[in-house]
Image (cartoon, rainbow, N blue to C red):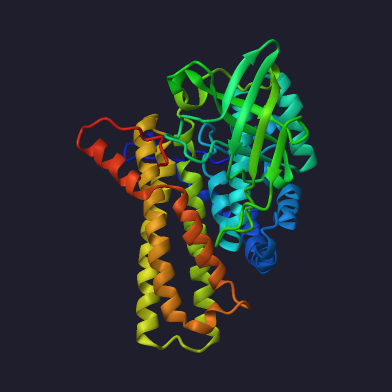
Length: 405
């Protein structure tokens, strides 16, 4: 699938470029079918996955069969070649948004996996692509991208260590929130090189597989209130030997390449899609209950629609900005879109639950799951910190627009 920048004829008849349209892909058969799949199949399965924090395996299989597990991967490898470095910047994000309308947990599994595959192909050697990317695509496995740790002082400063030894590295530490760990083919783990202080030089990406000696996972740890269909275990790395061929790129490649800034819009898409899914269900519920003439309900529906339209506009503006070449500006716009989508999600949750009434929270309905998923997932990023970073930029102070927290 490809999305191109359209052109039109100006007053003098000259061809003039039009702004990149990130909404165009929404009207393609693939996206329409994915949206149907999310609402009609993924959403009804949600309660069962939530019960035990199970990986949404049926949903993942459906995505694999339709090629969505290779959305960010190049067409030469059988993917859809959609990411912020590609011509088609929107398909990946709009697909994530569509999946979140039905199951936010599945959308997060998809998001983490596609982020991992994107950077793996972009920075990986031909041997690494053959060893990790191709088999994962073929087998329909997921991938994990794990930086999170307990008591981490800074997003790029790791407690997990990597010590150079002949032929490779000894990696030791504990990582948490390892989304997709239960069904992963491989994971990219962040570690700090022993003896090097500056994170721009000590930040190392190591590729591990579940069968490596010293790698273990605690699948019982992850028991949150929401996002339970995106199981994210703890991974323990007990003196794991990682061969040199499993080191992705060079030390500092992740922060120096500003990769974290490329991922803001993935979270935006999930927050926005989840809120849209909740709102769409609410509208149908109110219609089926015959309560459409209630003026208070009408007002709440209108308020949420206005807020969603604002969040969508911010989301699409941020996607479009990545065609302009000003990376820092795009990062700031993406952060703003992410924060707006988060605030709209919280506001909509409050308004819709009061308008729908307590019966709407019964287990037979998905509303309580939407709310729990939003309350949990929106906390992934520090939105006060986001506002501070944007404010620093406005005031001419130093800032880092790649940071989540």
